[in-house]
Structures are given as structure tokens and as C-alpha cells.
Length: 615
Image (cartoon, rainbow, N blue to C red):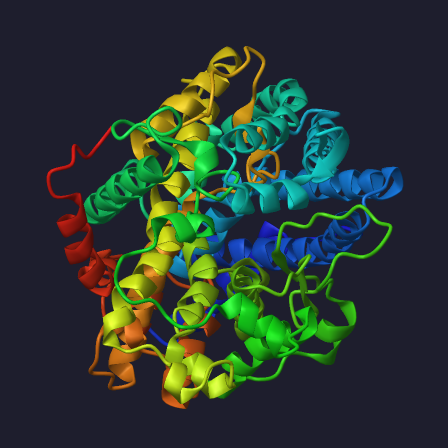
């Protein structure tokens, strides 16, 4: 039921009564400023509007979250329909409130009300226009896209396989023909999405224009407490800081792949074949560490092996992740987390296996959804996803519109910052390795390469996803150029190409979850910068004096106290204020990455000497 706003007449009457009372004190004591009264009148009206808006959004978001959870953990025609219905209703409400907010001039409001109005207007990922049927059509499209991706299968060697099995083959196989077949097979599941995706872009852009933005990309870029053009420039500045390290890593990896496969499969110059890097999207390369490993001493243990040898289960991995956060002094996860999370893939159900963290009631019903495997990668992923949950719990007492990260990069950085403390020291504390097995300084290069194959290789991929999407959403890239633009951008930023020419109807971006799932991807690029910035600040707070890559904050409650204080702010203030609270600086900065990987950079330059780097 819609609540009634406080009517302007009532507001005016209360303000006039106040003015009369002040006037009774005499002109020598108080001078009434009509402009100030008018400003306060607008502020009172805005506060009443926002209180009602937040109440409506909170109630509807709880219903929508439950429907989305049911659909993600049990994909059926019925759950798809329910999710689409709730999505349409949520979009309608958000767009309606955003449009209603246009009667307020944010420049004439106090800072808090102005901030909330701005969040209300720009915080809708896919806005539908208010015309009849638009929200329902948009919700139907997004539900179909999500379901098509999540249930995608293709024929391989005479049988149907899904993404989980395809990803294992991409990581484990060293047969170029097999790798190409699996890479092309998975990417083929995306081709049917292209018409729906193009239609979705048209509708969402119409919605963005109705809210006062020239296009949806500009609306997304308005969520960073600066103008969109400034944010784009900030992204390029950060990439410039770290690009030299990526180019050295690319040169090194290409050389090792050339040695392993030969010129016919991977030439010694130019770009790298996307299917040879151990990951379906070539976004992280640790899957082929056996090919790329250094000629320096390596750790005498394999974490995946140790986890399995010591009887770790998916549940125990999540419990271990929770124990890291509680070692910092943070609360234990609610009992409902353990009762309601999907930690492993249920038998006999189609689910969205892509790992994610959920907050279903904006207070304490936090959950994770994973098809967890007992391996080193998912051990890291567990820490990442729990970081989202601990952030959600930290800001749960904020107003509804502030229940989010300072910006979306913060939310992604939190868990990965914690995971940077999964060092040999930490593994020894867990009993996963013995003191005698803990690698010495001579193994640092190998350890850093393993980390760089995930962290540094990822940066230009993250940049590419939204670079492509900004072109699509702005209209600069029409549907007939979707796939070529994707290939061109990945070549430019990553030095990566498909294993063979692509079909005319290919829609390769749709083979990455965050495209059909409509998750803005800039957050991941920013998070991979900021997690190292957080790590350096935390290690300084802990009094660490050794190399940055060997620091672990496990068990440090003083760091945990400052960490929680940063998270508690949510989105209630501009992100530079929140960043400064923990790091002492108001600017995102890639210099901590350079410091962290400095020993590896020296090694890579030595290995690449005399090579023709670049592509």
C-alpha cells in the first residue's frame, strides 16, 4: 500500500509557525531569511519523500531477492516466471521513484538528501521506461538471458557437457584441438542470446534517457561520486600504472607457451590464443602454471592436494573462511547462513553455479551460492564471497539507500583483500603445511608468479568487459558489430585472440556470465587495484616490516577494528572519505600492486630480455 507523503501545505504551515515564533523574539535577536525557510521546506519535503521511498524499496527488494534466490538455486519455468515478475515490479518501483525524485533540485538540498536522491536516480542497473509493458518485457529478457547461460550445454565427443566440465577440460587438457573444440563449444551457447541482448539495450537506454542520462553507460559511470568523463579518465590512469607489469607477464607467458606447443599452435610473437591459458575467458592463467612455472625454487606443496589430503569438505572450507574473519574480531555468521546457503550443487536441479553472495533481508539473512569444489581456487573464492557477506552485515544499520559498498569496487575488494593473507604463514597456522614445508625467500618468485597469473592477467580482461559494454550501451557499437568489437577490444587490451576465425552469428561476450547477467564489470577492475591498496594499509597498521607479499593479517584484531569501521559506513558518504578512513589516502592507487610484485617484475624482465614483447 502506498504511503502518503507529508503534504507541502502542512510543511509550509509548520515552517510559518516556526517563523512566527522566532519573530516573536524580536527583530534585534532574529532575522527571518525567506530563502532559508524555503530551502528548509524543500529539505523537509525531500526527507519525507525519501523515507517513504526507502520503505517501499526495502519491502519490495526483500520479495525480489527471495524470488531471485529461488530461481538461481532451482531453475524451472515456474521460478523463472516468478523471478521475472518480481524483477519487473522492482524495476517499475525503482523507475517510478527515480522519476518522482526529479521534482527535487539536488543542488538546493542538504548534502544527505542530495546524496540519497542521486543514488535513487543512478542506482538502477537496468532501468525500464515507464510506458506500459516495458518493465515486464525487460524482466522477461533478463530472465531468459540468465537461464540460457546457466543451463548452457553443448556436444563434445558425442555427449553433452556444461560449463563446469568444459572449464575443467580447458584447465587440464594440453591437446590444442581438444581445447579449441571446448572453447568454441561453450561460446556457441551464447549465439542465441544476441537478439534478446540487443533488444534489452534498446529498452534500458530508453529508461536511462527518461531518467535524464544520455545513455545507460553514462548512468553506470555516474555512481562514483564524480562525473562520468572523470571516472573514465581515472580508470585509464590506474591502468597506466599497472600495464607495464601485464605486458611483461604476457611476453613471458607467450614465450613459455611457444616453447611448449611450438610455432604452429602458439607463435613466439603477436597475441596469445585464448584457449591455451587454462581459463574459458583467458581472464586468469594459473590453470597452466605447469607450463608457465619459473625455473626458480617452488613451494614443496600443492594447496589443492593438501586440502583433499586433510579431509577438507566444501563446508569445512567455508568454515575456515569464516574463522579468518572472526580472527579479526568480527562476529560469527548467523546460524541462518549455514541453514540457507547453497554451498554445493544440489543433485537433480539446474542452478546458477557462478559463485555469489546474497543479502535477502538487508539485515542478517546473508548467504552464499556456490558449487564449491575442494581446490585452491575455491578456497580463495570462499574468502571473497564471505567478504561480501561481512560487508553486508557491517552496514546493516544504515538507511536502505546506503546499504551498499562505498562504490561497487569496494564490495569486490573486501574479500580479495582478506584472501591476500592466504600466505604460507597462514597455511602453517591452519596446519595445512608444516614449518619445515614453509617456503623460504628463494620461492618468492614462484609464489608471486602464481598470484600474478590470477591478479595481473585479470586486469585487462576486466577493463575489456565494460569497455565493450560502454560502446554497446552508448550506441557506438551496433548489434552487427558486437562480436568484432569484443574481439578487437580484447586484442587491444589483453593481446588475446580466438583460436580460429569466428562465425558471422557469434556472440562471444554472452559466453561470460556478467554480460547476460548484466553485472557491471568495472567493479572488478577497481577491486583488483584496491585490494592491494587495502592490504598495504592493513600491513602497515599491523606493523609488518617484511616484503608486502609475505604479510598476513590473520588474527590481528586492531586491523579488524579499523576494517569494520570502514565497512560500517556503507554508501553513506563519498567513497574518498571511506577510503581515507582505512588507507589514509583519498585516491585509488596502483602503486601497492607494483610494490607487491616488484621481485617478479625483475625476474620477468630478465626472462624477456631480447624478446619482441607486445602484440
